[in-house]
Image 1 (spheres, rainbow, N blue to C red):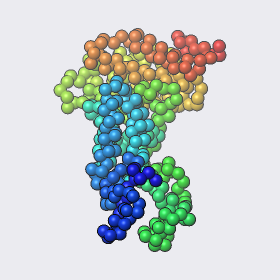
Image 2: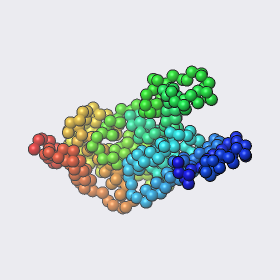
Image 3: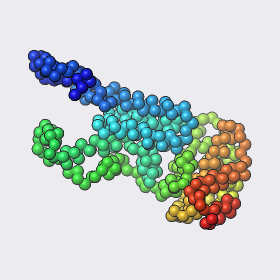
Image 4: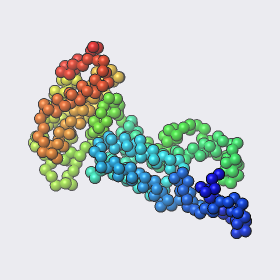
Length: 363
């Protein structure tokens, strides 16, 4: 024991005995609260203020990233891999107060959407991808599932001194809830988390090979949460289509009915072999789910091209509005085809792909 780095904490002992203990141990008397391995330890129930270190750490990460140009997909990945990793250590030790959970969710939500309106509720985002979410961890459910490990330890580690103390002080030899049917944190999390309704298009939207930012845009469109002009009526702007200015800008018109988009889709449909004309995104996703099954190269091409087309049409619309850049359909088509070709070449470098006819054969 390093005397210079150690303290002794005393409770319920009279002054004379305390003095003798300190004299014999040569340790300084410590006082609460203090931190051990970054975690606050107190002699009472933790308050919201004690979790400031956690929220401060998350805020520091976010402030460091906010200056960077990140897509929605990039921000989502950082939340999933880093921010929820920071939380995990604390969640496995303490039950977080509701106020702390709310603060963390607000930080992550604002980081994901920025200053724009919150397109999709956080509770929906925390659903698995198969239920229409992004697969983030629900903070309260994840906290409960991590803390449930303590119940498992009580159930399994019956020979330890710690278990005997728990039995004597808290359980007093009463039976513990039978938890042997739940094995592992993932199964425990599934038990605690709110359940959603499984959707049919998740395998198409999140198909392997699709560029993450394209998949994210397609996910927002599939959730009917894209901020087209008909959805932002609280802002006093002309709500006609950004491309043709003939009809109100809705998602259906913007992506399928508008002459600009129709020209692009006609070329891409012929290119990837879609004979049926699509009138809505749901019909397109339904067709894609049926025709792009399996892991063949043809299936991947169709999924990648579909998501890339949706992304580039939306990107052309935004460039027109915010940068006054008049779009050229042939230029957009060229970008879509080039991107699909690059992705396919990265996936199958030994396969010859004819970009003009999309004929695929072994080289």
